[in-house]
Length: 125
Image (cartoon, rainbow, N blue to C red; front, side, top):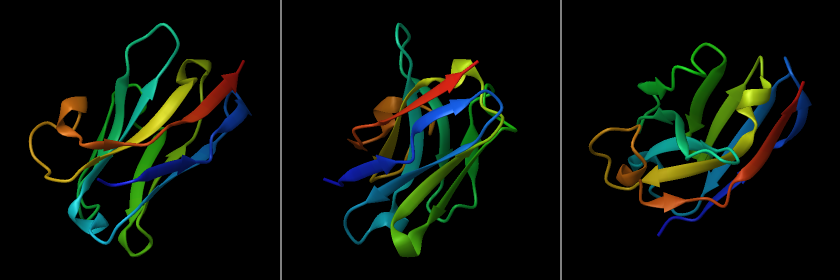
């Protein structure tokens, strides 16, 4: 099992920026596909972004494309989510996820094995 710890959440005004980090345990981080999901009150958890093993391929939800950027540093066992032009509707708990055997649709929760506890992002209007 891979331990994942998110950080970087907080309260920000609309139009502002935040950078989330996800630190992973173990020595095989470069072999995992990684993703970000979010869960807003009263809504189902939804896909935000995902990144391939080397970072060469990225995927985004249409609602965040052009505003959010996913990246990873395999030397530091860390994944990032740079969030710009934040909107109140981005308010949610953001969780990172790890697919130890990357396969299938990167946007589907069931294709991920391990999850972090999440970090709260609140965007005020």
